[in-house]
Image (cartoon, rainbow, N blue to C red; front, side, top):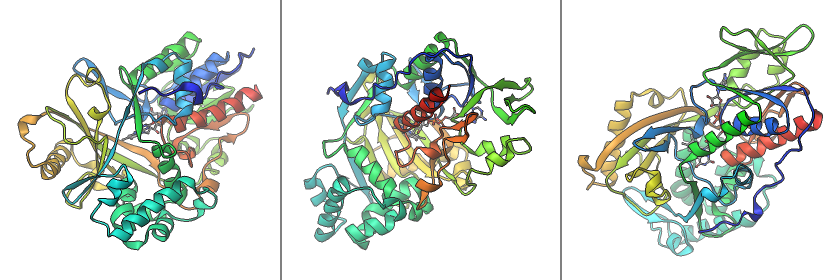
Amino acid sequence: MTISAKDTDVTTKPKAINTSCNIAVVGGGIGGLVAAYWLAKAGVRVTVYEASDQLGGLGTFFQYRNVSLERFYHCMLPSDRHLLGVLREIGLEDHIYWKETSFGFMHYGRLYGLNTPLELLQFSPLSWVDRIRVGLTGLWGSICSSKGLDDVTCVEWLSRLSGRRAFEIFWKPMLQAKFGDRYHKVPALWFWTRFNREKGAGKSECKGYIQGGYRRIIETLAKSIEAHGGTIRLQAPVEKLDLTEDGQLTIHVAQDTPQVFDRAVVTAPIFFLHKAMANSRLASVAEQIDTEIDMQGVVNAVFMLRRGFTKHYWVATIDEEIPFQGIVESTTLLEKTDTAGVHLIYLMNYVHRTDPRFHQSDAEILEAYTTGLKRLFPDLQNEDIIDRFVFRAPFVEPLYTTGYQQRKPSTALLPGKLYLATTTQVYPEVTSWNGAVGLVREVVDELLGEI
Ligand SMILES: Cc1cc2nc3c(=O)[nH]c(=O)nc-3n(C[C@H](O)[C@H](O)[C@H](O)COP(=O)(O)OP(=O)(O)OC[C@H]3O[C@@H](n4cnc5c(N)ncnc54)[C@H](O)[C@@H]3O)c2cc1C
């Protein structure tokens, strides 16, 4: 399948400028890397500070046999125009492959496809009337305006359109799958954006992956930053942001001497900022960030198997007895050369970092997930499982509440000095590599405009 590049974002190339400006980028995920790449390319002196020993943030990878696998399942969509624009710019666009994919819904042990009107009509957990109402909700969601949807919850909006029963059986489990017990606060605008991104304006579902995995994107960006004179520092967690007496911005990393910068762009989760700016000349600036903003985490396991289960990329597994909320069967999208020939599935459970399930040992998680898998697929044998790994992330998706659009932190936290381009600000775009790149583009344009 070929996706035309004509819709991708190619206006991202900044003009080279003549400047001695020195900018710090905090965080080496996709947001930080793209920010640093554009700034370095424009002629700015840039230093990336990454806390961990690896670049890529939530899109990072691990070595398995002769391939690099994603720690957390990742794919792109044809509508990811910001991301596809960057991939074109760094010469990777031709390495993306696209496939038609599908979505399944496992309802108490029975698997339903949910990709066509006919499949929806066959979804027997809903009454006939409810099936039609859910179909009409989908149709309305794809044509209605998003105006006002930030002020209504998904629960209100979807219950009004589909009816209370259909909400309970169909929509609620999907919201719970992402937000756990905080689902009831999420604004309808989140759902609307996500639905329209996935469905791509009514065309059949299609997803993309890159030969060599996301590692290839990360490494290409890192090389480009360095080729343009930028510096990347790994294992360099920023602990403090401050101003000198004469108003210069300083970045403090552990025992290092504080470094002075003209400006900084923070792409790391905002939570560290309160601490990093407390007891500093920036303390009052940190107070602008709403302390009520919180984020959902994830516990995700990767299973390498000798067999696959379904033809669907993603299957929602809605059952209180099952300890994960979904299965991503990556091998429905990835080429064998990108999986070392094994069947690759991800099982995920979106939970808050304070939830005991976030802190279970790897062995406990793997035991529970394997039991859950066997329950769903009773013919699964121990010999089918080649390897299993667990990865957790505490800050994945903001726990949105109504009116979030107004409350999300502004990008210019201290204009002319300190900028934010974090996951908490991507809304109403879906949190994704594309969302991060789109946000970073706004910030970089603003910075380059100033300089
Ligand atoms: C399970 C899962 C599945 C996903 N699936 C997809 C998908 O299919 N497609 C898609 O596009 N997106 C997907 N995403 C979302 C996507 O990964 C994120 O939206 C994106 O990676 C966010 O990038 P970022 O650079 O803004 O933040 P992050 O990736 O969170 O990067 C922030 C970086 O800051 C670093 N950092 C933290 N504190 C400090 C500090 N004090 N000093 C210096 N550095 C610091 C962190 O180590 C990290 O590297 C998925 C995420 C998860 C968890």
